[in-house]
Length: 214
Image (cartoon, rainbow, N blue to C red):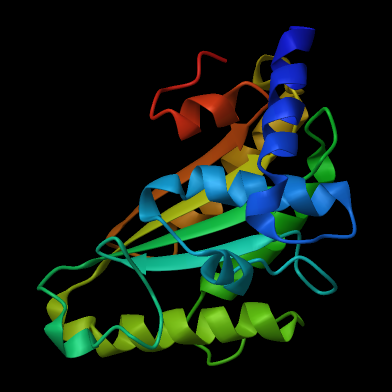
């Protein structure tokens, strides 16, 4: 990876620190910056970014978990009876690592946790998760079931965000991403799945509404 890509990323994160309040670790600024970059077009407040920032114990390698209905952030302010027919429920799950590379372990965890959380036939998932994750899952499950007669579709976006080079990802890591995509594709009949990697050069392109070149 060209060293300038990493230098540019670290510089942008540093310049945006004030937007994310006072944090104790540089990794926390990076995580909020990554979330903000991915969800830039949804114009979330810092409070809303923090609502879905679920990093901590029992997180299943999920550091960010956000749900939108037809582009609107799922919150108590949404009155579901006014949602149009055939709405799109869009989910973002982010695994964020400050490391300069992409490892297999986070995706191995996601292969277990993401389908478990998004299997809604049971009120509670199989594995233990922190309260913040469970609350977001419960809100999604409630909205999905309440909108059943309107024939909702689900769009699932899983992003592994790091500071590495996406052109140098090990084939075993890519294989795990493919497995995760396959597992998620079996959950809903009306769905689309996107599992991708976001590396050092990608954040600038997201924030400038362009497609990354690597």
